[in-house]
Length: 578
Image (cartoon, rainbow, N blue to C red; front, side, top):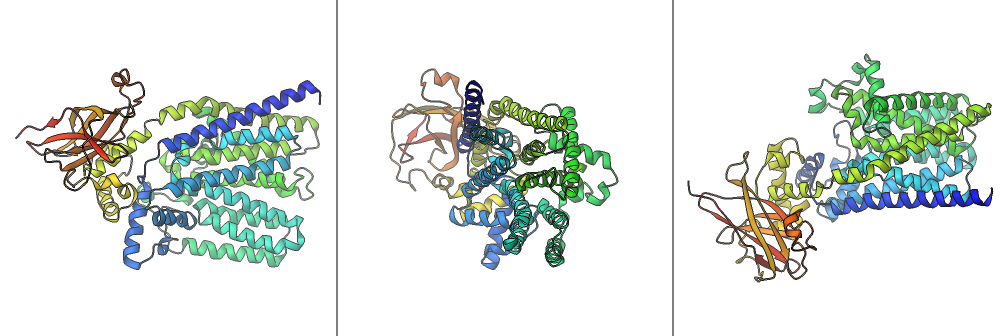
């Protein structure tokens, strides 16, 4: 390699790895900044169910294999139970699990790619940067910022390890039986992480037939697969949502074209988030290409075209994710094609394109022109993925910047027993169920109810707490708005600055005239008019909910001095007598 060319490769590699690190860091910082300990959607029913099981049986482990929609995620439940037990259900362990699993999967994919392709040291560095950018982009915030989604990243991690483990048996005859047993355990882990993990058993049988396992090993694997399927479906039932759309995967086989469209959009949306027609075209091409790779894998018994273990592993990973997309289309296409564009599907789609590109680049066809075309196709996929990630990273972060304030508004509403449909509908679709679930969390001091300030509502601020009055703040309660869906309930707004730090105070306590706490408000909203006077008080606006009866007056106190003192804000809201 010429020195100038080598310098360019080094510079490009450094640029890519720095870009990957920056994208990963910005996504991680977003997750940290927007974290609020509050359950989201399915987490509500899950936590409440555990609380009931704990009360009835004395153990939450009896729920491990309970069905959730079409899933039985026993493995993720172990993490959820640990978070519930050790951290009062704050979701921190769950989020940590998402990032650790995704990081481990990135490492495994990097190792497979550098083994499958002939790479110099700096190209390996560049590959690491590309993987960081693709696997930790903000396009995947639906998975990276929600701890409940650990099963969504976990199933593909287990599947990749499973495929590698089974394919590696041929290279280690002495340890073949041991690797088969490890593979079976990994297939079980994938199965009981998410429903598409069931595909690992089908993939495993294909690998066994292709690798010409002994009848003893093939029979053992098939027997365990049958037992696992029986256990999984023994008392299987359809959820309310599935019954509502008359969901039946077998019925959907009558409509191959919608299934193909859904599958193509599921995979292609990651490369074309804004143009669904282009996404469907790209996903369709990717699907057909993956099927071609499946044929090559099955009939290339002499390993002429797919020459390395790593390349075969990546090829089968591609096929597994294509199978996941098809399986999802069978179960979800009844909800419409746009359902295939949900951001949570970006994670498997990105892994699909990564493994597909690496598989194409590692393929060894006899025609050198075809080999060159395959490498160009792989380069196109990687370049397109990077361009999409780069062009959407800032936009996704900005579009979701409201997430923390939205979550805090929901916390405020729940603490004040104000069930504002507009605010709380993001947490749970059934408001009446959310009311009951919130009471269970409050009684057991779980999630946000485990935090110190959550104990304030219903207490007297001066009589029940030793909080001295401080003069070191400036702020107002300057707006009140009736909540249409709740009687005697109001949205209250204002601003607050802690004058000892010249920054916004985080928490505002809402009380009646006799200091009875009726609500908690949270700062973090932009107030350009205040920032002119307090440049360091970024987002000093606060928002919260409170109940006010006719004739009552609501006052606001900021918690300052590390929540050890209170400071009265100017202004109040007085509700007229009726």
